[in-house]
Structure formats: structure tokens, C-alpha cells
Length: 129
Image (cartoon, rainbow, N blue to C red; front, side, top):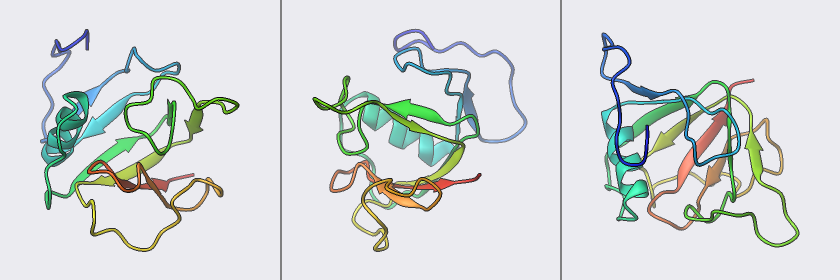
């Protein structure tokens, strides 16, 4: 993915779309998304409201890194904090406002938690290791 342009490396046999890396993040973070996950990601990239009631599945089996667990548009960590590094995980997206009472922070990185709470992009992060 270069800017808004994507290039097909190989056509798959299912409905998932995979990207080998997000060059805007510090780590190597391949990601695969189902069609509703792609709608969610496109809304995030366009800074538009995420679609409601369209549950999607996303996986990042090498993990990833973000500037913040709370602010989906942060490009730098808050002062005095480091980027958030997550291990391998699966995400359930498109369920904003309907999520269970899970922790709103990753205090225990081995337990599920809600990332970007209170936004239309909130989603369940489920560690797989």
C-alpha cells in the first residue's frame, strides 16, 4: 500500500484482503480483514464514521504498533508514554456501542480489551498468544 494506492500481489481464494505492512507504523504489521473489516478500515483511513452494525473480523498474527490505544488518529504517543506494541491478535470491529464490559485498556496484554473506546472505531482486541 502506497498512500491510497494498493497493488494486488496475489489474488486469494477467499473474501479476506491482506496487506503486508502499514508503512506509517514503526513495526512490521501485516493485517488481514474480511469485507466488513475493510469497510471499517476505510472509514478509519478517511476519518469518517465507522459503519454501524457491520461486524468484521481482522487478524494481525505478527502483532502491531500504534501511537495510542485511545486515539485512533494519534500519530505520536501522548507525552511521557511510548507507542503501544501489541502481540499477535484478532480484532472484532464494527460493534461500537454494543461491546461487552471489557477493560478499556491493555493493562493485561494477555486478556481481551477494547481499543479506541468511546469512538465509532472501538473494537475488541483478542490476544492469541
